[in-house]
Image (tube, rainbow, N blue to C red):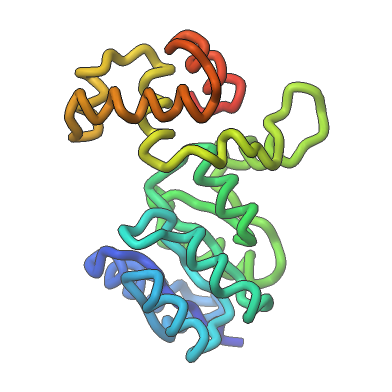
Length: 219
């Protein structure tokens, strides 16, 4: 049976490459048909509703909200659609956010074409699929064992994506100027983000922030 796949990624060249590789497939594999694609959240929501794919390959970060926004808008109306996140990011909070949102798996863009095709078939069949090092994030986040990261962290959820980026680098020991260079923002903007994180977490200094970030596996 042909599996209908919908691609969501804001880079058209990447979508074209994935389409070509998946539709080429390999002899003996169940065929994959790319029934549609989208480069934004709104396009994705409309396309998925119209085309009713079996599996959605979902980019995590896009300018207008990304994978979490697509999940939030699609899953209530179409709970049978299966989502597989495909991202350059291997950050724990990104993995956990889309799995909380309802994705069945998460793989990084370093995956081979053959492995990606296999991942699509596996999630469509009901299996959870993760790139090897990412599975531990999910196990920890949804585990009840002592020391595991909580499945829901209200304090962490208060932070924006950029605040988390700044916090992660800060916890790794980067100076404000180095953080600014890594994220292509000004030192003043870094200071603003750090002040905002301190206010939201009710902590006093970067050392407390570093420990707080480490406890939540952001580092």
